[in-house]
Length: 254
Image 1 (spheres, rainbow, N blue to C red):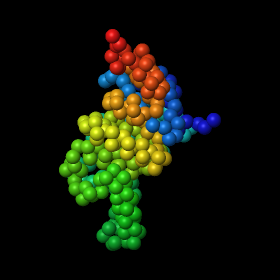
Image 2: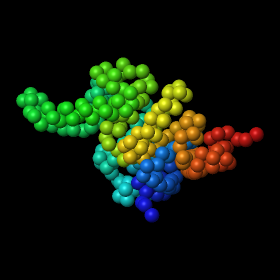
Image 3: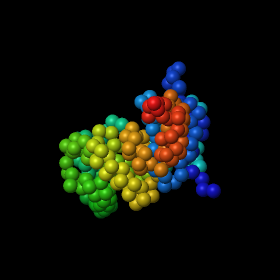
Image 4: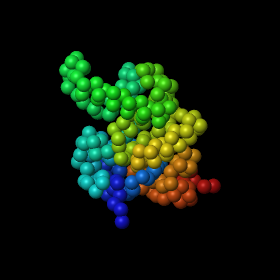
């Protein structure tokens, strides 16, 4: 049996007297497109923060490709192949669209190389630009190449943040409400693009989503949280008919 890409075991996170996550356990197979839903304050973003290393759990384990990463800092997890986006856009707003992606590629060169025009620097810059252009083209953003990120429409900035995350060449991509603020058609277009990119880049995607039409229509498996605990897990049909989910998230049946 193939080992899961991500395994979360009995994860508990406390903030003072508040228990944000309680005994969370689930696994994520390579290539999956998993959705997580729940009311505001259910613990969804805290779970992403724990997986990406922004917060350390009080109890439990996080395994990535069979390796215990529970105590790893965010940058070390990113190098292993975990990338994420945030509810609030965190772009380098005054830098160009191109530079936002190129910075994420993480290619380094000697500080004196640009002055001396070293061949290694010139080659690295060409490769970096080619890679960034291809990635931006995947999101139909190449026409914005020289513009500052803050000059883009909101929906395009959402795409840029995802493109920047993909520049890290992740194995696991955590998306925190990627369709928030988008029209229904924009949301559909973005999710369909993500499915195509998942296949193209051999990605595993885990997303937080409040748009129930999106999550029910495009996520083969869904986890439902409420008050820091998993109250349901399964297919969209199983989640939609789960009494605990109906009561906590979708509203009680009449």
